[in-house]
Image (cartoon, helix red, strand yellow):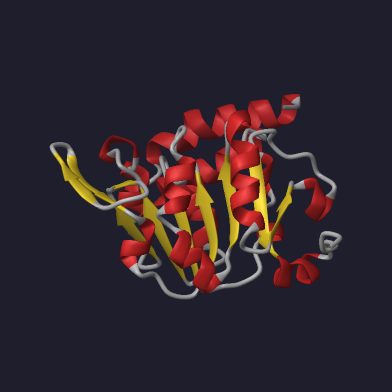
Length: 214
């Protein structure tokens, strides 16, 4: 982060932040992160890796930075997180575009003491054009529970993966005719090493990405 950005973001947090009304805190926080240059590259360039405007899904929404960015591009965003303590900014933003659901997602539906565990498929979302998954090690289970949604709507999927899971995820997507991509395949910007983008073959031409060789 250069000196100007550092000074500007510090001033914004100190002088403006305390006076930002609750419903505007999420957009303000997103703007400050972009000013600081502390957004993930994939978040900074999110508009370059989406190909539709229907429904986006943010699994592991957290403080809502991706949720907010997706709400600027999609008609509807389904934001899911199992921890109510971290989603306050999304709740305060109170956008009609955003549906916030506090649920733990996995590969099966079951009831446990801490609450009901659901599959993404259980929500029967429509017109899904983009899915982001960042769930601290449970990504493969979330994928298994989203199989029908992905097969039906063929969204672009951005997923954070541990190195040990990359080949498993890529093989899973290969069976669905998806190509494993990185941010630099879209715009020559180097992305986060742990973020992987899976694009259905039929959408590759939209992004100017070559299909895999047979």
